[in-house]
Length: 497
Image (cartoon, rainbow, N blue to C red; front, top):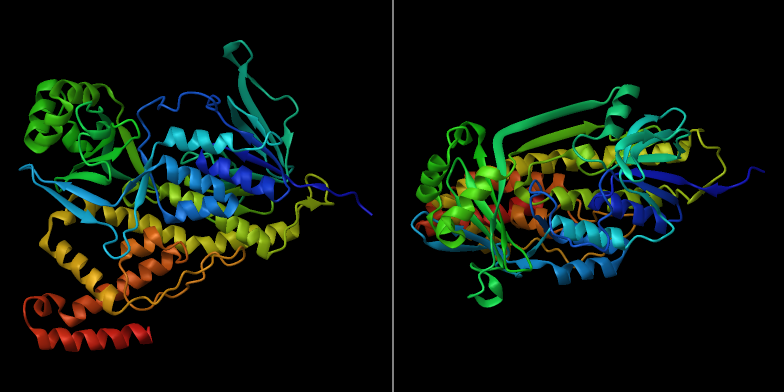
């Protein structure tokens, strides 16, 4: 009888998704090794080391993924994050308008800095998990399942050397972001559909310092995500624990190219964001704008996300999306929860009697199932993220947006989706395969981890069709009979669908 041994997973990338993947597989009994190109952040100041990382909004999907691996981690993040109950819209004339995310149940999304989130997840990893920092994947032989890493020699950071013998694995998991080297290696092995699409907008991070004269140091309300929407561009602000805000300007490259001097930038900010200039100070705002990097925003899709029993992609390596739905992190963490569910469903044990390099048919079927089951949801959330950019920078200013928000709230109360508190089992990550009744798209995407993204998109398309069909605007302005008849027909349609 062949001798059994623990399965070996090599995870490339120790960001939030890679760290949670490592913790999840370790708790399943796998031998886990992690490679990360950056320095070890554990035990250090969690302040950002650069200004190319948009603050993160962790919501119910991300928290549920953390909870599925370790409930205490989810609780820790909720304690360290800042709840945001809605959007605060800043108009050019200085008027502020609060748009609550969940006017019925009061649910919030949570602001947390990427460095702090990453640091806490890495600190939660067991000492039995081998982590190699300052190590890049230089090449991988997927057929023979051996990876070669390169890193700086000790005390010689300018001298980079590659492993001589390499590291063997049963499964290599690419959590190495939008420009994944694991994905590149997979694409050399098989026919993998890959697409990338940049939007014509840049992002630039700015900083709103804490105000010592205000409670908690917050110059503006800390429990909102702040948006200065200006149709073709916008400024957003997310709160930090120290009273400051991380501001991000999203602007077309064509417009950005005209702001090529401090004077031009000054006129731009004073004209379009006068309240931000007043709070931050013109000098500070312009210093940040002129000196901080310009970032690109890209959507990436890769199908399938698995190859044989040898390789798998999670997070941005598989599905990079623009940040406008706040779901990039949440979706990546959810990948880990869904993968864990598939491994459980396929009864993939933590041990194997196969030699390193032999194909594991059971694991191959499980990874294929993960890729197929996840594909529609990843396509849906990438589409929704792109759509939400138009909403954030422009539609939030439209009267029709306010009408739709009112009707969503009204209809949710009288035709509720009838969902109960569903238990998300280990083998059934999305028990609500069809949403009934009425509920807003934002509710389904952000606060319903029991609903797959693809179902949220299908349901919203159905609800838009009902809205158009019943002529909701005319009902709202006084045609009560039309409204009542439309409501009855909508209820019947929703029950049937």
